[in-house]
Image 1 (cartoon, rainbow, N blue to C red):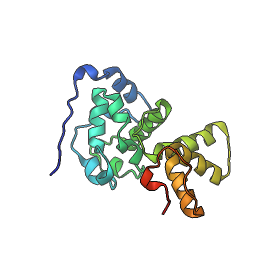
Image 2: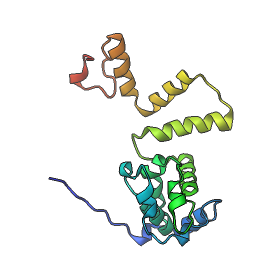
Image 3: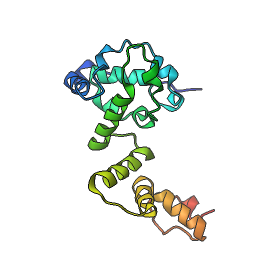
Length: 179
């Protein structure tokens, strides 16, 4: 049986000034002209994998629910394929909006927990903005260490036939011997 839980959003938790700030960004001007028809969600090839559809993210942004919009997986799963932009009857540039939300989420460290995409995004932004070029292997190792150090330990143990160190965070007594 499925356990369905609903959470209520209260208007007092919203920040309408944030919505106006988002609408003032380049490419996001059409935010308040969205008629909530759902064409963006219907045409998105990744909407099946998103926790909220693009239409719902627009609604959250318009109402000013900053944290809910920025921590949704939808922002990070947007592939920038422009299907939603082409199909939108109001010509809203949703891809630009998602990109803007993604940049803000990365800057404010608001993203879904245990989700690898923001970690990779942060690494690439660091390379581009600061010119810190590192070999691919070091960049991947850094991302894995930030995202899931326990998984890295298990992978190394599995490849090298070693046991994980005693008391290593993320190992259970049943995992003492790596398969």
